[in-house]
Every structure is written in structure tokens, then in C-alpha cells.
Amino acid sequence: MPRVVFREERCKGCELCKEFCPKGIIEMSGIINIMGFHPATVIRMEECTGCAICARMCPDLVIEVEREDKAIG
Image (cartoon, rainbow, N blue to C red; front, side, top):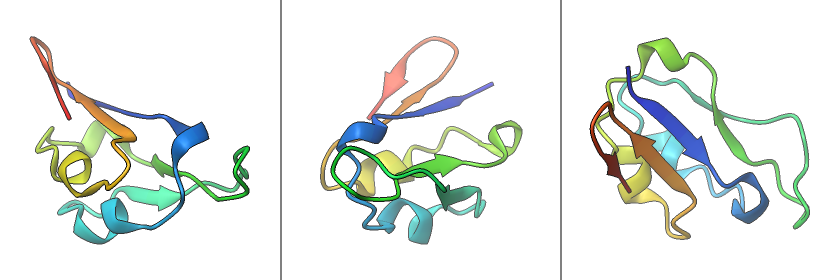
């Protein structure tokens, strides 16, 4: 199963990953990171297909998509 990892401390909450996720499983977290933003998080990881569109859209390289045999992003 794919796994999406966010470097929450670097996320500026631009919501591009949320906008482009084809499954609609990315939301903004209720916490505030060290920079004062609500970082993105995956709310239903089991629905992630590992497409890595979120990682490609992130302007700050905050997202890493891990598949069973390799990482993308």
C-alpha cells in the first residue's frame, strides 16, 4: 500500500496538493506548524493509489510518496 509522508514543518499550506489529489483524501491539518501554517495531511491513507500527483504539485518538495519498492517525489 502506498504511503504519503509530509514534512509538516516545511509545509506552507498552499493547498495545491489538496486541489489536485484525484481521490480527495488530502486535508489541511488542525495543527499549526513552526512557520504558522496548517500543514497538509492524508485523511484516508488506505484510499491512496500512489499516483504522486500531490508530490509533483508541491512547490516546496514537502511530500514524499512511498510505494512498496521505491519512493516518488
